[in-house]
Length: 188
Image 1 (cartoon, rainbow, N blue to C red):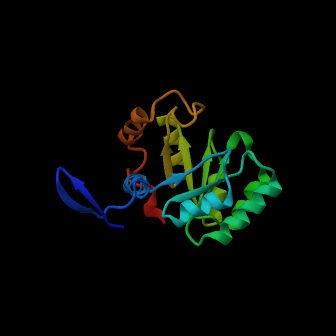
Image 2 (cartoon, helix red, strand yellow):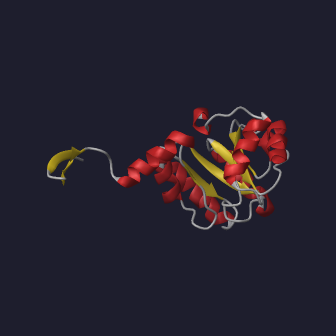
Image 3 (cartoon, one colour):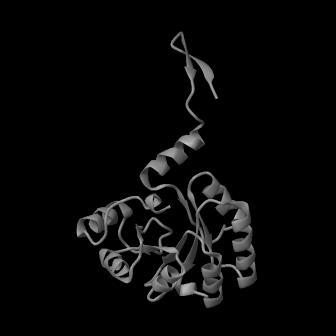
């Protein structure tokens, strides 16, 4: 959309996109945009983010199994783009994980603890795995277990994910050389 503006007596035409699109593009340049939230998850939100080129993520932790299965099926109906399903290990539900494996999203993400053999189970189903980590040691363990994507997140991610700031943690994980430094969007 072009807008003609006056600036210091001179006209110019603005052809750049609206601010919301610029922000999305800026985030896309860095890591592709990922939406993740435990409390406000819905098929509509997940599919909207995925359809806009980001990685929409359906949370499994704080909803009933029936609601989760319904939202998972609805997400698959609303988008043909890649999306993720998050399983927070302290709230892990085997039935939700089995439904996730059957749905075959592009990515399964694990948060708040070591995912153990769940990584292998996801890989056996042909699904990429993203592990959220709060320390270098967690990143190294996740790589050893076979995680495809490491998401280093600091305490800003809700205040329950460690004591180190993201601005400190990410360079530490990169410097540890436990995993290649690249944006996760290359996996799609």
